[in-house]
Length: 270
Image (cartoon, rainbow, N blue to C red):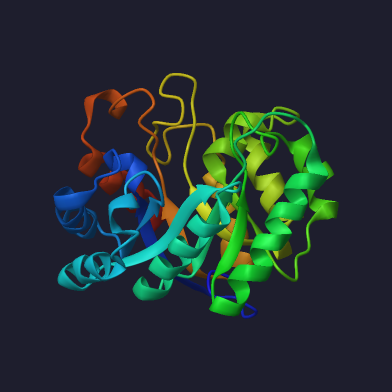
């Protein structure tokens, strides 16, 4: 299974840079973005279906050519869980053309009504898996998947034969307020290791919020990396930095992408 934890204890990871970190380049700016991400040390990129990739949805071959031109890959596509069925089809066509297997579904509503959204992600898994695409449910700020308590309600309703969880370390560190900062992402990863088949590494602190390079926030990456080494991980991991506060401490996206990539290189040895 692509993007899964390994049955053998080994690390075999491909690294993607999230387009949000680069202000979601699109159109003629997309290939220069790929070149910059490659220069910063990444194997591919992760993008939003309707916030950067929308211009390619009706002509996926153009995106595939950009990827071939730069030797980069499309690691994952993020989209709202309640996307229209016809638009899911367009996104899956794009994913097939670009050999992208990771679909990240984000719940963007605050109402604490869990069963309908569990049913929705289970249905998405039913339609994606036959096409070789793996659907993952994302933990996100200002949604019903925001805090630890939300997941205690959601997880029993999810069919893990069809879908999996993903862990966004930054959002977990910001939002799992039932626990101290250093425990938030680590405890969730440790408890649900067998259900989490895709990860997004991001950091958080009160000064730069989620616009924080890895290692400059409250996430306990030392324990997270130790757990990954102990259990083994293979597949894609996306490194993300939001731009909700502008460029972090005046640094460019390229600088921040390099800082985060070097941080995981040192922490994991890869």
